[in-house]
Length: 291
Image (cartoon, rainbow, N blue to C red; front, side, top):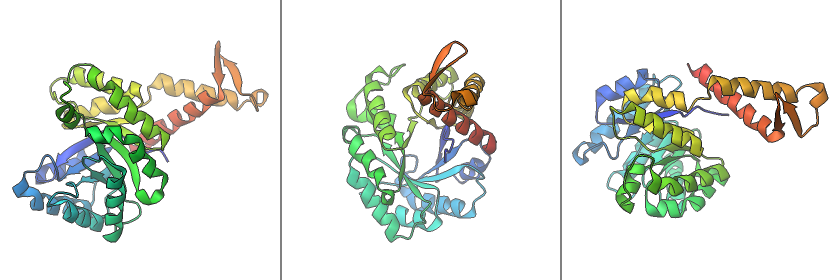
């Protein structure tokens, strides 16, 4: 089943008003954060507020994801145990660098009694994470790993590699593409990193278009005003949906049954294009159903 993940909004778990507002925003996913946006002295408050909000519900069709602190920190294990008890759609693990990080977290969730529907999302945001991304993605072949989504942590990648965050992201393109390939090889969705300039919606649009063209499924965002742009760019445009409809209809014609390639409006169309068209329509229908 295809789930739209055009936009995923980070919300600080220590901000009760933000948690309440998250229930009304048009993001496809809400990332309730216990890690970077929460000061050490507020970690336990944030954990209690986030778990309380998830237990209360009211998020509608939005995916609800809790970003925990790393298992190596003072708060990580308690975060996982508390999150397992309220059963969000997913747990977002920070700084995943080795396949063992996934298996260890999955084991901890199982030990804590997390429901089967709670998946693992992984932040790829370290040099080791990028170097090992194929092995990390490969864990998804085992359903017990719970792994479903990668999120690029581009700010942390810049910090750790000293690559500059420049328009067009030329220093990072090879790394981003490497992660797209690993995700696609093992059936994992992949969301792009955040865009830091809150007032620059044109810059955000350009970066969303780049992420989409690289093959990503959506964009993580840090402010509600960024959601509409991400939702627009990562949704199939009307012309693409119209063409997909024509492709599927053409292959369903009796005279085209069993053919591997056909001519449609002067273009050669192959079965692989029909498969792409089916996904386009399924995504469009899922977005319409969510509205």
